Every structure is written in structure tokens, then in C-alpha cells.
Amino acid sequence: MRKIAIIGGTGIYSPETLQCFEEKVIQTPYGPALCNIGTMCGNQVIFITRHGVGHKTAPHKVNYRANIWALKSLGTEEIFATTAVGSLNLDMEPGHFVVCDQVLDFTKSRINTFYDNPERGVAHVDFTNPYCPRLRDKVINCLYKTDIVFHKKGCYVCTEGPRFETAAEIKMFAMLGGDLVGMTNMPESLLAREAEMCYTNCSIVTNMAAGISPTPLSHSEVVEAMDKSIKNMEKLISAFIAANEADSMECGCPKCMTEFGGFTL
Image 1 (cartoon, rainbow, N blue to C red):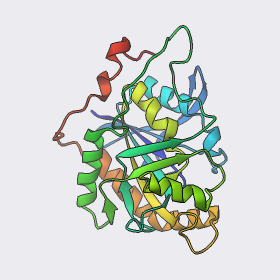
Image 2: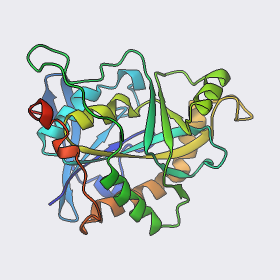
Image 3: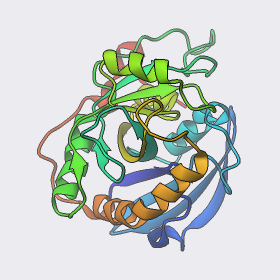
């Protein structure tokens, strides 16, 4: 049995295939985390809506540590996260899916580690490849079986939010190699790595970024674009959960904290 978590970003609040799950509040040292727990295709599946019910939690206020701790305490081994993003890359158009392979972190105020107290000590985790290569390969294989237009690689620029970016910032991010811009993949992916869980992201392009888009950006535009892609994302989530065949590669995520005694709750 695989132990999978789905973290739903903007627009992915209650996938139809997961609606029969049991809602449960998990208490953690960092506060409560609301999880929806069930089984599907013989696997344990947990769903978390990142921004909360009704999209009431801003990206810089998401309790990332509570969410990741809760998933770890429930035995999660694989995390599939969705994000809505703006595009800096003209080849990555609205409606396209991108399986990111790199990240640029421009967040400012978020606590981004579990290792920030004397009891746990200090740890410096390797983050050369921020997304699990094994899970990325699984998602890509699932996408090949659909008619979804997708890209196998992309660099996700994570900003602090909640405001959208300036045209000058977008120009800078593009010069640094960024392809997409969003507000939630950090520190989420880093905390998952520290907790020795495999984590991958699939981003949905909802708009061209500031200075590239011919019109001012708005959240309603993002939500409207997501509405058009929700069915495709639900199709991908279902395919990922059902993909129980043996993987073509291994990864080091479950043992990445061995140097520091492994991750313990």
C-alpha cells in the first residue's frame, strides 16, 4: 500500500474522487492541520487544501510546518502538490501543466525548517534537486497517457505574496532562469524533504506574469483559469493515485536526514 498525500492549491479544494473521505483535525506542535483521509486504488490517501476551506489563508500565512508534520504523523510517504502559477516562459501558456524540477526561493518571513531549536539541533539538508525525481517521473508517465499539454521541466520562482509581482521583478526572475511564478512551493517542498518524504509539484499555468500579460493581474482571473483546468487536474490526481506499478528509479528522500540521525516526530 502506498501512503499518498495530495496538497491542493488554488482551485483544488475538494476533488470529486476524494469527497467520501473522513475529515480529521490532526494536532501538531505547530498547530492543527485539517486532513481528509481515505483509501483509493488500495492506497491510503490524505487530502489537504493548502489555503483552507473557502480559500481564507494567504500564502505567507499557510501553516506549512503543521501540514507537513501532520502528513508525516499519518505515515505519508509521497506528496503530490498542485499550484496555480503565472508564466515567465512564452512556451508555457495558460492551461499548460508543468512538472517543475527546480525552484528559486524569494520568500521572506516564513519559517522554513523544523531544525530551529536546541532540542532538535541544526541540520543542513541537501536540496540540489528540490523535487523528488522518482515522483516526478511517475507524474510525467501519467501525463503521457492523457491529452493534457505539459512540460517535463520548469523552474518555479516562489515569492512572498500575497501581492502579485512587479514587471521589474518578473524581468529579473526570467534573467535568473525562472519559468513560473507562484507563492506556495516554499517552504512546503523543503519541509517535506526534511521530513524525509518524497514531494513533487505539478503547476497549472493560469496567466502570463506581470509585464508579459497585456492586462493587469487579478485573483479572479486566476480562479477562472483554474476552473477550466480542474477536470484535467482531477484526472491527473486519480491517475497518480492509481499508478501502483513498480517505479523505474529510486530516490534518496526517505534517508536524506541520515547524517543528522534521521527525522523523528
